[in-house]
Image (tube, rainbow, N blue to C red; front, side, top):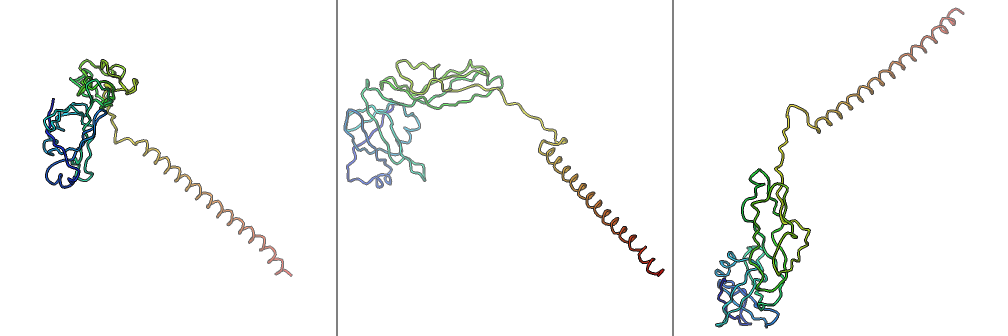
Amino acid sequence: MATLQVSERESEENPNTLRREGKLPAVLYGPERDSVSLTINKKKMKELMNEITRSTRVELELDGDVHEVFLRDIQYDHLTDEPIHIDFYEVPDNHPVEMEIPVVTVGTPEGVSSGGIMDHLMETITVYGEATDIPEILRLDVEELEIGDSIHVSDLDLGDLEILTPEDRTVLSILAPRKEIEIDLTEPTIGEELLGEEELEAEEEEELEAEEELEEEEMEEGAAEEEEEELEPEEESEGAE
């Protein structure tokens, strides 16, 4: 079990001053104890964070006493993404607690070796049970999974722990390989075909409009010629008189 040295923090100590000194403010609390303000070495805390998960129990050494705790919450600076405050949660061994357990896979699935793809859908599983029964990590052996196989929450066996995540949720699946679609660049695509059809329709409309205009012009010319023919006999008759 990982161990971390901590010290009690006085109420008048400024958290920002502590951070500038390479320390982190923290708090220790639990269902059967009073809250205590703490100070931690920032470098040691960051090293510990790289080694544990949220469901790992850690030993805090405080004034000669050892407290087994969970890392309950971490506050980060929104600009630097550096930790600025830590919450530790202490519960007795037989005390029930709700916890998220990280899910990791072990081995390479047969389906992946055959060209398939492993789709890891859930990174954590939520459980409820005694503190001593909470595992640090949930490891899933996936070597025998073929293409089309899946692991659901209902397939998991965590002993006395109650799984709070819905049973029908899929933890991971082995998917068939994606088919590559070959596109012949010499042939028009669907978009180009649609565009070609639109252009053809536009050309046909323009030709139809041109034909209608020509017919109107011919009709107007014919009407004008008829008027001229009607006027000529009248002029001849006037001259005869």
